[in-house]
Image (cartoon, rainbow, N blue to C red):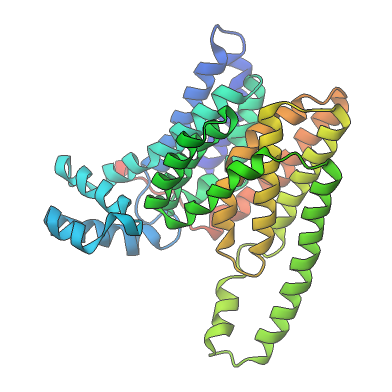
Amino acid sequence: MGIYITQIALIIFLPIVFSRIKDGKKLYCYTAAIILLCVIGFRTENMGLYDVKNIYFPQFDSLQRMSMAEMFKEYPVMRGNLFQIFTKLYQVFSENKYVWLLFTSIPYIAAMTHTIKKYSLNIYTCSFCFFMICGMRIYQTNFYLIRHSIAMAILIIAFDAIVEKNLKKFLILVILAGLFHSTAFIFIIAYPLARIRPSWKQLLFVVAGFYVIMFMASNVMEMIFGLMDSNNYYSAFQHRNSGFDSFLFPSICFFQFIIAYILCKRNNIEDECERVTVNMLCIGTVLMGSSTIIGEFYRLSYFFMTVSFVGLGNIIRMEKDKILRYSLYLGLFIVLTWYMCRGFEGNGLIPYESWLFR
């Protein structure tokens, strides 16, 4: 746990140092990125859930034994197998699986750092964003969801295209992300939904109403599953898909949406970046609510949530009441630190293991 506490402490307190020097915001972002990359990039296959050890490493070995022609036959590109081609190309230069882990950790960290540096109002909102990706466990899932993290990195860059209103660039990036992980194609809805301008009341009604429906539906599903035999496939499905902290994580997402909703309305915030990210937060919150029934939906919500943190940080920073502003920062820090610490053990990240010290 010590390495994660040190990591978060540096992310939170380094802005005090960098704010005193020229180009401090840029230098801080690069430093925070290196801190995050060193921890995730030098991990072993035992870190996180079973994916790296039981799926990615065996597949890496299998690809080593294939010729390029055999690989294309086994993993057609148009079926979302660009990741296998990416891995095979890496093997032309190296057969080291641990350096490959480092290499595959770079895209998400680089994309997130670029977006935070570009859109955050100041160095302290940069710090808030880096903390959020850790506190919301997005960073932790990247320890084992490698294909998903690369797809997410590409979609973070696609967020640029949304703000810039560049549809062609957006479509190319979404297709590219989808070829790494097919679930990324859902981000295609981001472009039209980011452009709509519903009233704040309509946004609140949609999200709150959806959560009420999900709460009722999950209770009905639980009753149905409870009547089934414990060996039944659908009963097993329920247990497999209800483990992402049940209503806790969706509740945290909903709380963040309420903060954004109230502050935007209170301060008449209409900036393009902030409005787009609020819409992304709305979509992500709705998808996260769906994870109470189908647990894997949390992966879909991450595509939208990860880019919304920049806007959320800016929205809180624009609050004129300093007491309210710092209270919100403190409240989110306490809740997400507690939630993050719960996730380290649950996601198999304790104790930390690095291949550098093997």
